Image (cartoon, one colour):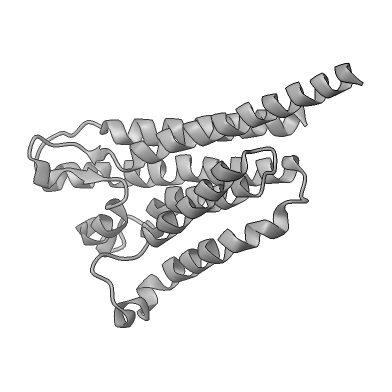
Amino acid sequence: MASRYLTAHRTQRTRRIRWLAITLVGLIGLIGYYGPWVPHKAAGLIVIGLDLAEYVKFIPEVASGRIALRREIFYLPLFAASVGASLFASRRVLPLWSRWLIAVFAIPLALAMLPPAWNPAILLLPEFRLQNVAIAFCLMLVPGAMLLRGVPDRPILIVIALLSLAAAIAPAWGYVQVHAAIEALYRQPLALGWGFWVGAGGFLAAAFIAIAEAIRG
């Protein structure tokens, strides 16, 4: 009986550590997202990952359609992080206090997708329809996560892996598409900022760990 209890305790502790590992690398990805993607010596010319969603629509090549790009892809890290936080909050293997903390964290992540200087009239514009849907989904999922407590880990891990892959690849691909155009605006060559690498690397690591855990079962 004692050995069975110890085995179950170790298994639970191992599962908890793995879930916390995904959380940690996801946080690293978010740090990169809020870091500089467009680096510059002048602070006013630095563009972070979050700001790219609004910034790219003013790039002439994007505005004219010469570069086909959906600006909403730069919100994918926030969407993935908010949805992922709600899914994490449904895992009973985690301490109750951490589940509540993670669930609350999902709310500001969702609201960060709001356009700058927004008001109700702006939110009704067709331009922001997709953002509104994404924000509403994330906010509804916070209390909805309570309904997912009985879902096994594997499907939750698969969803987290897919979201993390999207958050790593889509914004990075979008930024690469407009990088030359931004260099033309700045009239100088620009390296990819550390935020680009840390953001993509963090979310890729989260996807890798989630896939490995899903396979492990």
